[in-house]
Image (cartoon, rainbow, N blue to C red; front, top):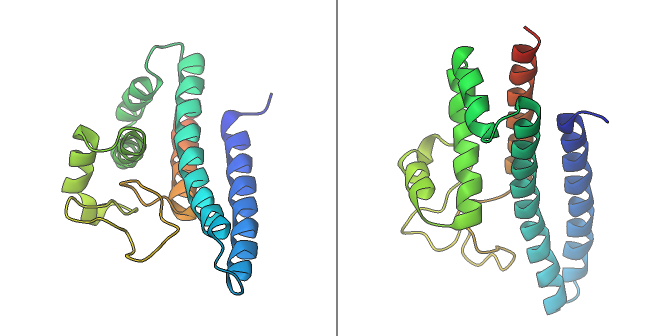
Length: 172
């Protein structure tokens, strides 16, 4: 079987490309019709990106647990990264884990931790006094993290970087 990261990268590209095509066709149709079904299609596309990001990280954790033979794949991965002194990667990895946790559970400790560093994050978090990412955007789905193509790709990039570091560690 091919590596998880290779398959995850291909899956991400395929899914985002497919969603982009549907998005473009739907926006074109919206030029001549304001049908609710078209707006719901755009909302569905945004929700699918959330599902993709959450799913990628969830399956990555299972892959880590299996390959590292441990109960907490993310914690074991962070220990390995710490031993390698990859502090920047640890921070980016933790930020993505917090963001995914916020997508799954909403407000809580993970959200509070991200709010404190909102200005330095490479993705957008809805602050406590914000109700929308873009007021008037009828395609926005409920959530505290803005899940764009770039966010999903960033999740994939972090998975790849962590995997590479783990693989390097296990071969040394």
